[in-house]
Image (cartoon, rainbow, N blue to C red; front, side):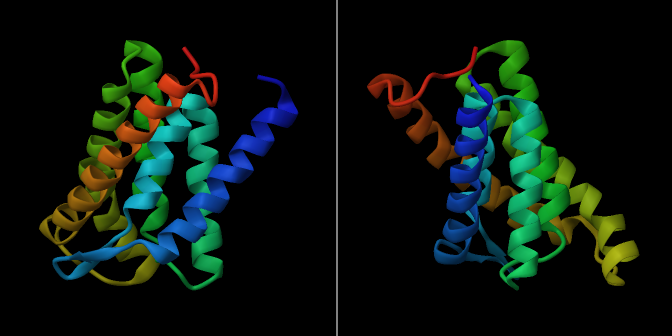
Length: 163
């Protein structure tokens, strides 16, 4: 993939992530679930690989925070999930491993990392059980959406899936 196509694809996924997170959300316990971020993470991981997926997750989190549409917790969950999704897809070559990586990375590891992150950066102290359920609900929903989209992308040959 040439550099122009890479940057254009990244910009498109960032736009979808920022706008979609504002439009599509649902209550998940005491928090809100934003499945579009997780769907974009899996799509970016499969189409572009782990490095660009992490950059996309970071920029989406940054823009959402600058626009007042998200919290600082978008960074650990999004970036860890994007990396693990890309890494597992790169190593194992199956799309569902990218989805599993997103769920484990964002839903579990990102949620656990959010406990000290929230304490240090946000000045709040919550236990892991506070973050894991909403992070899991959101990441499972987003990973499911992404699997549906990625299968259609490959089937319709809209974009070349990175192997």
